[in-house]
Image (cartoon, rainbow, N blue to C red; front, side):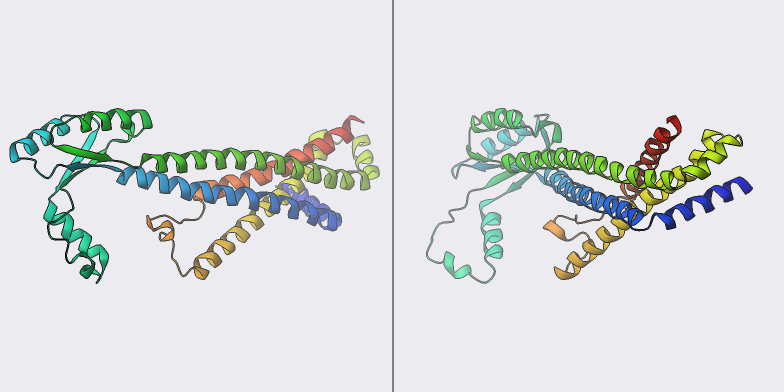
Length: 297
């Protein structure tokens, strides 16, 4: 216990002595993790958007005006037998027209003079996610158009695919930027610790002469790097959360309203914890590099 207290005190003294160098290390780590955190928040919410769209995704089958009850029953039976279909809803011409009028919100007069209802009856099909690939949907749409009584098939999977592709690109970009900034942080922490090591070179040499182990010498510097890294990552999380709340306030939104699909959340607690651990790890590794070089000299 006494040894741990000594190591902690020594590490805190080193941080105080490092001055602007230590602040630069903490600041660089904070900036690095802010940028990485922005990518994580964006990809997290875009991923939620894609998941929501996939959950709500449907294929609309427009039926011919002259379709008979027997043909409609046969079409429903054929469609329900398909493994791709998760659920099916029928909308009659009258229901479709009433729904369209509600969407016009007081401008129903625009429909006056149309005479016969021009909106076709339709079937709304919920599709299992496994069948929401472009190729599977093309094949399924081709099958639907061949059914007697079907006029047209509409689906907008292209938009879901584009957003999913954007999420993958952002994740890759975020990983690349994170690695680059992590290396920059590692070098700055390493140089800061190295200056502290050289400033105490004489003291360390005396410790070696009196029999102090390398582990005993390394420990305070290792803890110093971990504290700097943890403080940098913690500062980044505070800045990110402040910016996140300010953005919601500016847009007059609450978490869960962004994009209108129930998402708009901050980092998952597991990711926040991972960022703190990653910051401490960057600091610790930078310390090991610097102290290791000195002790090998």
